[in-house]
Image 1 (tube, helix red, strand yellow):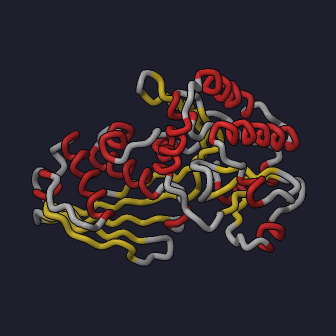
Image 2 (tube, one colour):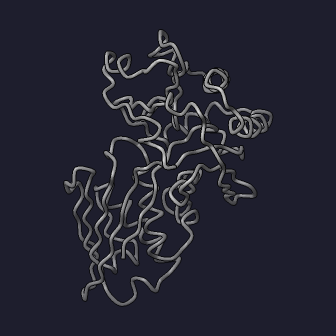
Length: 301
């Protein structure tokens, strides 16, 4: 059996999604495969390949250790895997009941890109176990769940947590100016859990902001002009900067750039979205940022 899940980029509503705002995200052309081969043995043999087809993780688990959630170690990846598989087993005990498996995972993007190594894995395991991926996420890894929505959909989505349940809607986002949008990797990965914790520390009553973000998600889908797109996100970044009490990434690193540089997901790492009338590749390469991906090469359409 083979399963596949899309990676993700959080475009609008980061942080606010946890407060119930309707937010916007794009699934990527990059993702992760999971292949499952049954074997006549009570073990689960696991091998994970990176985008260069090199093995970055290789381990073996007793099925009983997964069922009982034991044999934890100092290996963070092993512990996380056992926890996810244990929770999946609790939701559907039939899968591990009779035999073991050889498992192979394969990323199609570099692991440090932050496009959803964990979310794509969780969604793939949920497909294998025939269980709800959003529920598995909450029971194992935690998070808002927008990345699971991207993993499961091949088009742009709006996402909202309503009465503790995910509400996912497929939407049309096909801007005429998309050849002017790029994604630049900042050469550092951001821990989203840490970013969320920092946000919660600074949190006040955000009822008005949540309503405003939900409105802005709808407004974004109506934008047809590049300058309107740039100004829309500059205003959004400035407002979120005040809530987070952190300078925008454009102020910090790219104040001389003629256009937009917007943080994606947890502020301070992974990718930024860039929009400008001029091709920005030379500007960013001169500043030492070599990974610059065009909209059409990054986003699933």
